[in-house]
Amino acid sequence: MALVAGVHLAILLRFLLDWHDLLGTALLVLLVFIVVHYLIVRERSTPEVAIDKTVTTVMWTIGAGVVAILVWMVSFVAAKGVHRLRWSFVTQDLNTVGPSDPGGGALHALIGTAEQVGISTLFVIPIAVLTAVYLHELKGRMSGLIRFIVDALSGLPSIVAGLLVFTVLPGFAGYKASIALGILAIPIVTRGAEEVLRTVSDGLRESSLALGAPQWRVVLRVILPTSQAGLVTVTLLAVARMVGETAPVVLTAFGSSSVNKDPLHGAQASLSWFVYDLIKVPNKVQNDRAWAGALLLLIIVLIVFIAARVALARSERKLGRR
Image (tube, rainbow, N blue to C red; front, side, top):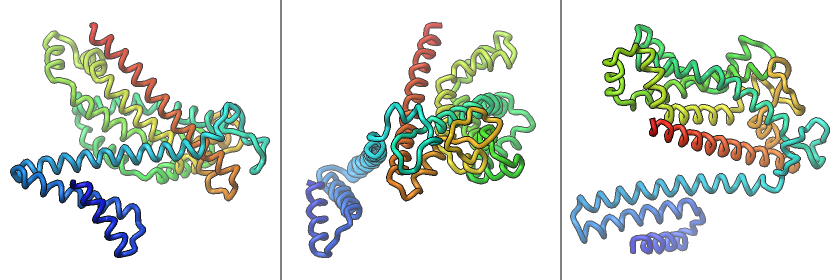
């Protein structure tokens, strides 16, 4: 009944006011639905029950809206890029094709992304996890200063990180992009890992220390294995952030249309740069390549996430058998 009232009121207003805004109509239907739903429940029950059911309805509606937007975004990107995504797209670069020529692919961008994110992850994750251990487990004299620096870095714009690296290390190279991406990833992993460590029961720490184990062994053998699930999740969030960054890559690696497997010398492409560089060109062929690159980026993130969850489930089963 509440939904019917909202739809009828929206149709009436569209007719009387010559209203053609679909988004505004949908929001009006939702608002009327919530109000009428509250009034009906309050009439049949108590005001407290009516508020509880209304808040529950609003939460479910917001959740459904977020899921719907996510599904729409993924479907839109898939519809735009699926016709261009072929095996040749991941085995060729753009070095030998023109802007309007058929063929070409994102091999150079795939290699650049893998090297840049891989190098950054290799150095960032240990540093960030050790920083989180220092902040939460050791709580040394520098904890306050380090936490302040981490909080400040978490609000650093990505383009500033790229500009900082470009200023200190002039020129273009893949490893410089890795440094810029690492600056952005360190606060994400550090703060996330610190929150994960807080979920570990104090009883585990106290029991281990009571048995005579030194603190470093407690952290290495008890705390980190117990919090492995959360640390993997935090790492995935950082990797997803690094894979999708464009501004620091443009300032540090610049981009290239050919394969460059050496991250230490010369400009190097990435998938995010590939999409950014081609989508702004007024050329349908280039735009189609950009949409295919965006779809490929989504697929890579999905594969990494699924693989990590599978590995995580296996590790949790092993820990449960111990």
